[in-house]
Image (tube, rainbow, N blue to C red; front, side, top):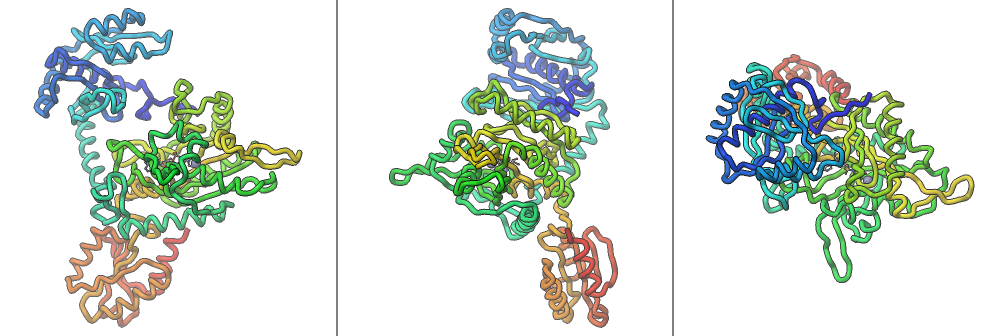
Length: 587
Ligand code: TSB
Ligand code: ZN
């Protein structure tokens, strides 16, 4: 099943989509009433609403939003019908230039030859637009102008900065209200908020933006994940290696990163006569390991894996908590295989992702086939045959595995297409987490080979894959997914023992030692506080198990078990509790 989705991941022409789109036009009409010399950039419908980018003579204030909103309501009451007209390219450019709409003129000039150029008019307002729309401005539904943001024209920092107004829009007032309730709930799950509250990670202005520091509890979650995925990989035929985070610039010139990926790299470090860079990807290092010896077809596939730290110069406006950072550790591997092995290896990678997701409790995700954009030769290596073959292979993998997917043009890596696994964060924003990529470019650049049955040297194919992505992005996702209430196997602290009064502390320590020796993460809260207070604090720390111990527990050799969230399991022998923990945390 192939679905074509637009950028926000929704089918393009649902009714609500049309309403949101028309509302963007209504907003533009209202803005034009207030600012007759306003220039318009783009104004699309988006998940939950719409936005429009404007170039205005002054900065907008929250009071302006109130005014724009009430003008929009008037335009909704006026119920102007929307009508569609077409213009040819020259006519359309002249029209936009004539009315001072230089951004629109630029958009038209950039449209591919032969594309129909259409306009939509409502009352006194006309806008360049592909449509479709609802029939009249009275039908746009219930909306609220939500917030303002800055946005560069065409997302390019070197171009003018525009003012973006975001609106939220639903069919009914109930849905709009429900959206804001959901948003409030979501904010409480935000990994940046919980990360601070649960002491998982921090940032420091002296270290720099996008360079998170993992605190002991966050580091524990990460270590558990790293051990889990390393064990799974070792059992699946991967060899784990360690390689450095820097290399000579020449390595990346040879790989093509310098040509196609330079904008995402930290600048060169010059020492004596040599130039080094921080690696933005680990592939070239793993390639050196592959090329360290000659291989025969009997050795293939060779799967080189590493929890590899890499650095990317992400734009400061795009950084976000742990999910988009500048220093990250990727659960990376590069598989070197024969042409005949490509599809099977890709499938095994996809199945490995599914296995890991089951373990992590991730159930909602979508597959994206990330394709190159043939018109963008700056971003993608120019080799049409290579793209056609690899993109075809990935389509076949989806068909063979019977997986639904959608296509994303311009989402490929510079060296090859990808199967990307998309998860939604708590605010509904889609992010790429896992990825499997097919590449015949890097093997060519590095002149890689292996000897086949015919005694000739052939070129291996490379598969790049990240099963649980970067530790940063995965932990960001898991914090939000579990709202900080991690399953016991992942929880930084699994058990807290709460002695009721002083004389129970010794017994608490004995229980602690027993659980710790069995490999569990356990602490005693030995403070002289009321046990009720200790329970309340353990609740806010979202610790899965609280063991209250008092006189009767000491007598009977038991522990009184409480679960996070309040359930009271009563007294249990130490052995029974240990078996319960073992059972619950086993893979
Ligand atoms: C899989 N060379 C391949 C590798 O072999 C590679 O680097 N692919 S990637 O560019 O797509 O990155 C892999 C994954 O890293 C992405 O799917 C994404 O989940 C994660 N990632 C990318 N950029 C960031 C970032 N700035 N912060 C956190 N995680 C990131
Ligand atoms: Zn790679």
